[in-house]
Image (cartoon, rainbow, N blue to C red; front, side, top):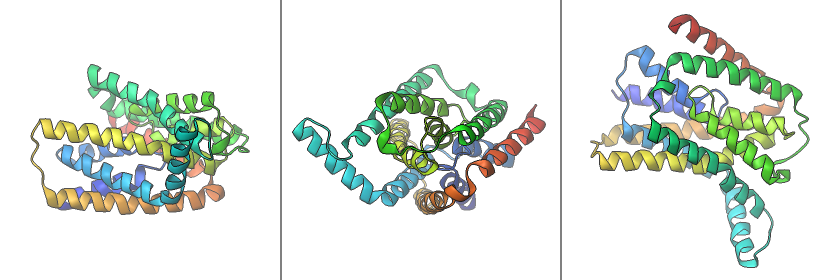
Length: 264
């Protein structure tokens, strides 16, 4: 039904960039509500929507970064923000390799509600620790290659539903001494190639499997996911310095306990 699509797209847009795991919510809501699987076409649509949101929000920074990167290639040396582009590329490699391994080995066991519950609790507590213990004095431009690899390796853990891609990358950034805003911005930049890879893989599977497409549902899903994701990025960055990570940690702990109570 179209309102199922709207609800799932809104959920995807609101949770993709918050440290609470969009994949966990998208797995759990249909299971709890008894809805059928939303299908590959829907998954591609919401990925397109959230990708459009983050690219649109950071459009000025992205244009400047890409210009500096192209110029650095011509000059064969660092130029402006070119290191940040290389950092995003380097930080994407671990999750790309991890995703390939999971595709080959199968990932159904990871979609268990209990796996989601324990990951939600564990990585929620880790987020709280990093926010409490982190020095919060560096920006994303100060990241070294070893820092980028560590954040990239952490991002690969988000292949476990319940971990949260944004949550674990922000956690790693905070643990490395980044400010909350810098950790969030770098996490959002890292999301761009990851969303492209995930959406591209799903689109390829849809084409090879000749999946039927409900274009009305796909369009509604992409629009709602994109609009809600854009607003989520905007308000998350605005509120981050005031509220910190504690509200998200509390939400994760409550969600994890409820899941254990229901499914254990």
